[in-house]
Length: 73
Image (tube, rainbow, N blue to C red; front, side):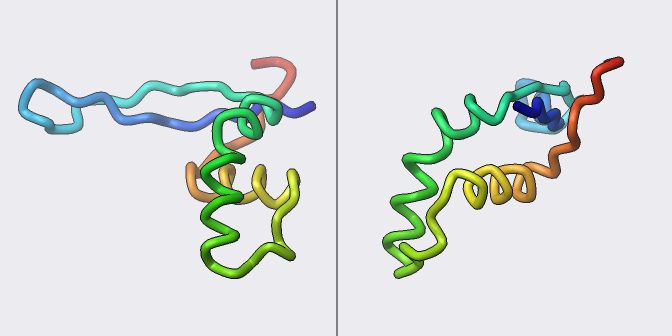
């Protein structure tokens, strides 16, 4: 199973982005946290035929500009 990395912004007290932090998430964690929302949205859009684990992971990776964690990281 792959692990993905993505940058999440860090905000100051005024809401200005001052930095970012890199988070890691496994494909199992993506499915656990994102699949319920994503699949409901796909149903609402009439795209039940596109609902799959891989399509959910692909969408999360695209939306969050993820990159695959290499074993050496």
